[in-house]
Length: 99
Image 1 (cartoon, rainbow, N blue to C red):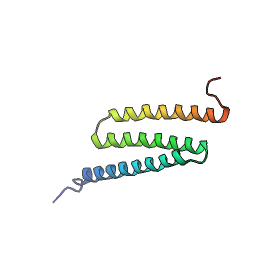
Image 2: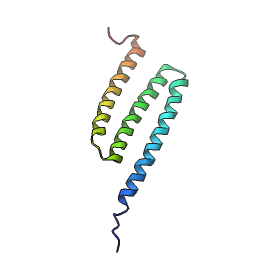
Image 3: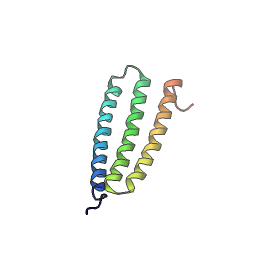
Image 4: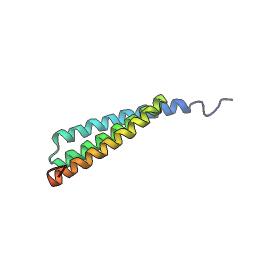
């Protein structure tokens, strides 16, 4: 009798690989909006989405390789993305970041 959990690592690996492909494709689609965005806020939202997708890619890569370092990298990327989004939003609304 075979163990029903024997296929779980293979299924997890395939799911994470599929998610990596999907998130990478979403980054490409968001880059189109960054380039062709009709307004500056559209471009800012697309850049924020790309930053979020890069964080997701780092976490998925950590799951795929089993290395916890990439989780730390994703946290740092999330913090940098948040600060960048707030700075750009302030620049768009007020015209300058530091008064």
